[in-house]
Length: 374
Image (cartoon, rainbow, N blue to C red):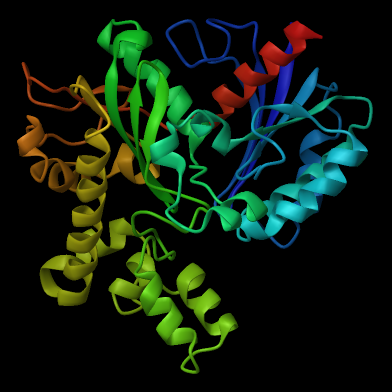
């Protein structure tokens, strides 16, 4: 039995799971069984997160490897990498690229390295799935000396989620991933879209940082850089702009501060114009990014929704797909499923699938591959 402890510390969540990668189909969540044992899930990191993690690990046999989700590896980590002291020190230099995600993730990495010092720790960057983006898709039209000096490029994120959802889509469609052209949307507290051709990311909405792309729960997504320069020219301080873009924008800002949760806003929209605007803007921006990403594909074999919203919010799926009719997509009319699968109408030319987000399976898969090579 080979057991991996998977660690996913988000900006507002904490997820740990022991995954037996020898169980069922290797811990991918398919029909053979998912191999997941004990779990720790917190929607918001508690004040005693360190104690909760210590208690979760205590008394259990040491895993064969600990696999950590690393949202942004910058130019330092482009693929899953075993952590040593030198790499750990260097990771502090990229923490500012994902200020909501990397500090808590690195704190958790430090804690678990202390608790499990004899176990190898693997960091799996979300940007790895997008590392092979075609050059025109990853290159920013800024001075070359800036790109070379600072490593400015489109990195893309949610890669662990996209890798898993792509593989599941192939299973659900009964087709090899290498033959598929897919549009995927990971919609949750953070949100992005991705075009996948032959199992490889060819375009994605997030860029140099996880602040880019579609509006999110509290993050702005893409805005006019000229507007930001104007605001910074004596109208707002850097700290005010930073706080506004990361903590007060997105659905929360659009709804006038009512909520950053689509469930609240969908329920309130009939009687609250600001909530309705928030959802209309979110849906518009998601389908706009999906339509743009579709230009990197030769055809469209399926649309795949994942992430907490993508999995569990049928109103969002319907309204996003309603704007994709030009691509041959028919809006799904049903509700949620209890399992992964189609939500599109029977016989749809372009199937619409939902895949439950299971980043722990992708973390475990990367760890199993690393263990097999050592």
